Image (tube, rainbow, N blue to C red; front, side, top):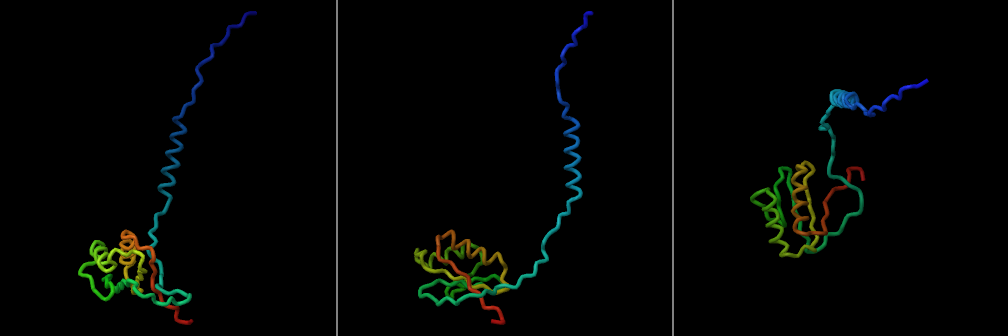
Length: 139
């Protein structure tokens, strides 16, 4: 008996159903995911425990009030933008970035004002940076 040989067909994988399933899963997860905005944080700043640091002579102090206004070594700045802050720090430091820099901010100061002060100090090359806090009311 003679049998005819079957021709081997080209083997291929159809990816269309796989792509359909992946898109359906993607759509499912996008629709079912809830996007929440975490804005309900309760923070009570600034308080910290630890030893008080003795004031060092020749330190530069940046005071930030509740409205975000800057006062550097007793001199109030006319503007709250970072360029004005950097110019004032350069003038007071006379290029000496090894001097300690202390940032004292009100507890209700906007966080952006403190970050801007830290950013200005970092851009100018200050390496000795510290923040002032108060001890909690029970200690």
